[in-house]
Length: 299
Picture: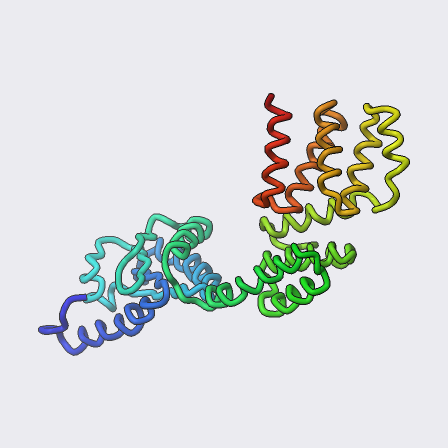
């Protein structure tokens, strides 16, 4: 903003309001600055969309300021507003994006997500995320170490802090599955938001319920007697999964794929991918198994 020298008292007040409402909050927040007027039809159409998006993103450090160009002429002049609606995203006193072309909720949320991913905005959501991130890592480490009850306890405590966080929901569900509490895990995942962590937990649930962890001797005898008994090998893979023998399960499923990749509309491949997803697609074991599958399918 320009100097206030030579401005009237009313204009100086307008500058001070702008500093208090926009510039100061923008030091830590992302301010959506909406230039509008009562007579502007498109402004009235866009206004409710901006208000909803700003309300949805308030805990992420987003604030909406509506500026009537007829009442705040000095500020509008400073921004050289030629047409309305004009919408800017302001951070640390500077425009960082022109949001004017975005007129739908979907367009605006995508633009805000991109900005929030690039700027050091300090909202409640970001503060909570920073607080729980190391706790989630602790829970994952404990779960990977095989202590399902302790992992469950950790994830339950985090869930109290962030009940809608999909990584926490997914982690708790996998801890419950590892502890044999399949029904509770299923209830937890019902209605959970789509997210990679939730998808991983659902895959773990599918794997855990693929077959009971019973004796495998009979299935192994059937496979030995008839290597093309794909159903027996498939059931054996499920039993091995339930017992935590992921190597044996992967070997059995890959053997089916090698012998008949289209058996039961690719059931073995589907189950194999579920197994990898339940472990975590970026896990070194999962990456190695994915390379085995690729070698089988593309050679």
